[in-house]
Amino acid sequence: MSDDTYLIEAAKQGDNEAFDRLWARHRDKVFRSLLRACGGNPDTTHDVLQDALLNAFKALQQFRGDANFATWLYTIARRLCIRARRDLDRFYSLDDPLNTEEGQAILRQLIDQHAQDPEALVIENDLRERVQQAVAELPDSLRPVLVLRDIEELSTEETAQRLGITQAAVKARLHRARELLRQKLEAYLHEP
Image (cartoon, rainbow, N blue to C red; front, top):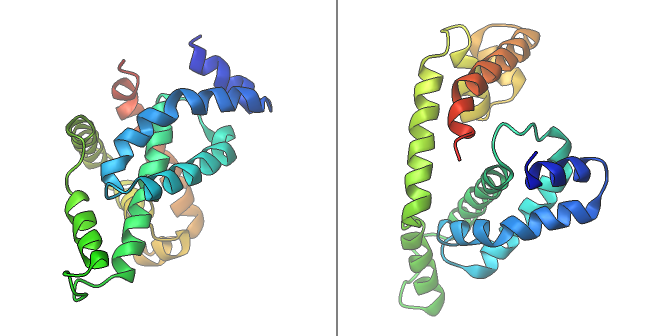
């Protein structure tokens, strides 16, 4: 049993110190990976990381160990970072004058959004390709449910309406699709 596994199990049993140790072990690595993805702004990145900590703490009981803890934490933080960037993009318009200090900061952030850490970019692209391939290999009855719910983020009700099936069928197919996807990606996720 790895040290992370031991700490995860202890944290799941209510040992807050174990969770703190997990967090301390991985936060700097996740921060560095997120910094550029969050527009190069350390304050935004810290905010995202704090939100990720809270989300990870709340969701720890659902952590199954399909990926290592750092990957799971990075995934949570990355999603939050993407949401934060979307919110920022909605708030600011490119029509704002770029010759102001605020305009220059917005421009730098937009440029930095696409300049990720090379290692993180390679890992992300490799994972994306493997996930796309695994999704493409899902049976035709399961693939649309997974795409609508997990990629397009539609609700169960919206997915059922779009596909003309019951909500119970959506839930059952989504569960099966996720399980098949997990099985297809399991070897990759457990690589050292």
